[in-house]
Image (cartoon, rainbow, N blue to C red; front, side, top):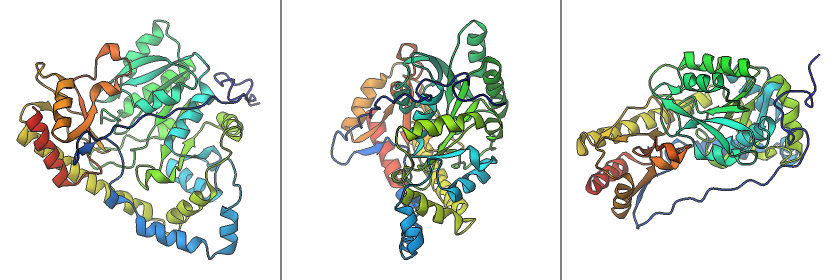
Amino acid sequence: MTAGPEEQPGLTTLARGLSAPKGFVDASLAAPVPGTIRLLGGIPAPEALPVEAIRRASAQLWPDADAAVACLQYSPAHGSAALRDWIAKREGVDPSRIVVTNGGMHGLALAVLTVVERGATVAVDDPVFPGFLWALEVSTKRILPVPVLADGFDVEHLARQLAAGARIAAAYTVPDFHNPAQVSLSAPKRRALVDLAERYGFYVIVDNPYRELRFAGQDQGVAVFNQSDRAIHVNTFTKTLGPGWRVGWLVLPDHLVDPVIRLRNRLDVHTSSVTQAIVERLLTDDAQWFDRIVRSATALYRERAGVLIAALREQLPGALQVVAPEGGLFLWPRLTDDAVDPAALFQRAAARGVIYQPGEFFAADPGLRSSTRHLRFAYSDRTPEELREAVRRLALAF
């Protein structure tokens, strides 16, 4: 017989019914001078957002009286049945394991509150997406940084730490087109990470918002995560249909579904019925529609990544070590000249009207300084002309 949530190892006291602490919000950077080109956010290109299709789907909803009334009422905490069915088919799992969330950050917070006890240690990418550290602070600030290599999260490093006696509640990684490091976790490492989790009894929190945005290379697959009872797979429509929807999802092991739903009933109850209804129509009225939207977007991002790399190589030859991404929204070049001060370069670039994220912003452990000599450029929402001009200004800063 399956144990109840109170008996399940690794479930936090919050998942068992206590109230959740308040979250907090990161402050955004402001443009330092008028006309600044911002290479900051991993957000969809305006041209990639399906505005006309959304307008049609919204207009079709309200004349349908039954559908309109239904979407103005409460909906199940798990999410709408049709939307969960669509997601489940893409994930290759039973719909009962899908919980619709208010975007990716909500999914991360639910995962943390469910499986990370207060004060526990969590292994995290280094460099790391800072938003996960913000979500993690609702339970703990104790982290074990794990280097991100050319093939992703250093599973062997984590294995050595565990063999030496380290104990963790969870391991967090972005497996596809890592933010910020742009790399993807290799298929053997995916299997090895899940094997470690099953051996040592921790959970893998898989943050995968860029998964659909592949424009080169080989898909490493997600089945190994979705088939494990030690993996929580977090995804979102933020990077494809737009962040304003605040619609994402969790793929959960069977034994975590009820604890997550009980926790959710004490927090936000459910995702907006209206937004779910519109997204559901977009995805289900035409079975091929979402794939067409993604193909169009990835073609755009392939072009912009290529423009940015070509401009860097032309205007700053040898100044940055650049690896072409296979997908996603970011470039993670490294300064090759140790005489260049990254902080001073950032200030000079800002004064010339281009800003980006300094690598140190993503350091899991600032003392390790592993990211200091990197720069993160977000190219997705900038035109080719803006990207070329941004590099021209960066060259002046050099």
